[in-house]
Length: 310
Ligand SMILES: [Zn+2]
Image (cartoon, rainbow, N blue to C red):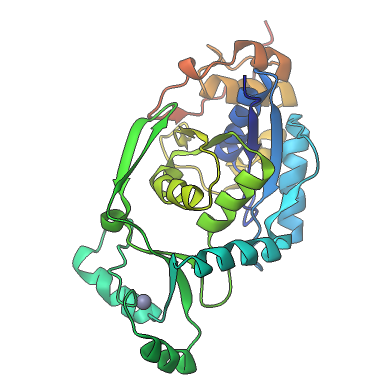
């Protein structure tokens, strides 16, 4: 049987909130309950939003919960040469093209479908001639886009079931490297998961719609397929989305009120692994963990004002 290699890959542009920590916990439990490995990757490409201080806090939050990872931490900010090499391969094989569209131009296309969550790039720069490219390149640095095919990409998610998308209609050719040189999330994630030997991706459901793009890119690069689990968003007791900027929903906020075991119990209960938010150890959670218990649609955080240990 294939060894499970799970991972947690936070973006330290703010503090981790309880929803991020629940995701980390479930990725950890999924791997450890099947004697798999668990890796930590810091997605800190977006400097200066991801500061060393926030990165440090994020690592300490995971340590506080006892979510130990195997091996060293992979920092995306240190992997630019690796992404360069992969991008170069894709350019050589004719899968990409330079896009000279300005933000203003892309925004103007949005007008008719305001409210859409995803911009469909209509391929303005797809078929420019070499001469046109040379001329435009004198005016501005292009971003690099990946050509996508007019075919449906499907996946089977452990919680969300089947999900399919025609990339050409859903997003169009997408950016691999921005004009300012920043590598896209899609490229970095696909390369890092493959190179780290990850087999299972556990993350928030808000990223499900980006998954077909990542699958397509991984196939182009000859990487093995991954198992996906997109977990529902965690709502606060009032039914609101958690934010990175609320102290109350950060681990610090919880640590002022609860012990580590109580916090694990609150998270375990939110994931329906426990019937009530009683204090537990990680080993207790590993024993009761099963994806079958976790609902696909919504998770709600509930916590008592004080936890009874009886
Ligand atoms: Zn363009």
